[in-house]
Image (cartoon, rainbow, N blue to C red; front, side, top):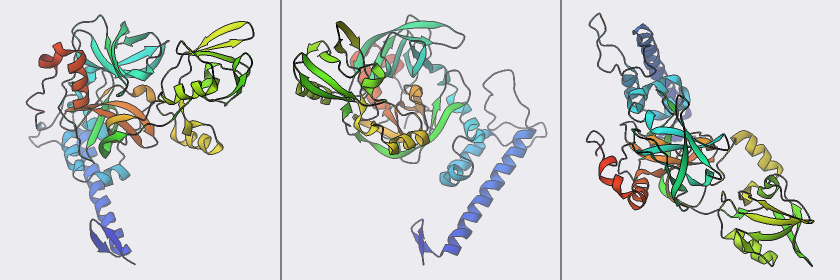
Length: 395
């Protein structure tokens, strides 16, 4: 029996030897680094330690910096991913100098006192980008130190699921977007957290930029025609309708302020919408008229036993996680409320913005070029001043 590795055929015993050698080398690198790192003087005066790349120790010998380690590890990513782990402390530390200019360009977005997303600062006078479908009510941005600003939605692009926010703040630190529309598969990416020296999470590009098809949206009700209108006959447990409070025997009066006269009309309207969209549903319950705002789910999210087990393994996913014209797929494990922040490559370039947690090992990000195009349409004054790529990031 023969096995193909790196384009060559090897017997299993040879393959085992190759991996043993790789892991031994990796272990030696990590051990030498930890020894050198433990001996280094620490700068505890600041949350963000200075990069020590190229520094000399008191004895005149070169010290091993975190950036040095990262440079070594990047040369063979898969053994690192399987042995150390992408979110190991050593790897996260390596991004500290890279994220120094970006960590203050990220801010959490809250709706009804719950964090729903992150936002990326794109201009110092209070302009930010975030994930649009999460803005289901009055939004606010909360900065480190407790300062809170009400956020006004200035523009939305439902195709990209991005929204432009304005807050009454000055002297914010904007990101400097690259012009990237493609990030090579296997590239490391870091997702910064507000004010933190280390990244929130680290991952790698797993699929080249591409379009994501639409998945069918579902409300989660079974309808029947009645003499007094369209009646809800059954509500799927844990569906969008169930979570919004729609009940059996409710009479559906309107969707998005448009009167409905048949179950077919309701079905057509829902099919034209996306999973993650919020629809205004007015129902009549006895003598009472009730306004509800369910957030549409996906057909695949109907709660079969298999789906329940899958959710327990995967965790929370973004409700809107499909129907994107062009995204980068990476294997970063994000929470849905961590979408909307920038992603940075190992050169410090902001190459995109996280837009959805899509699956167990898949998250999506809009490309930096997509962000630029949106800002050019909706915030033209920022084009020449804040979107310029620094010379150090140009390629």
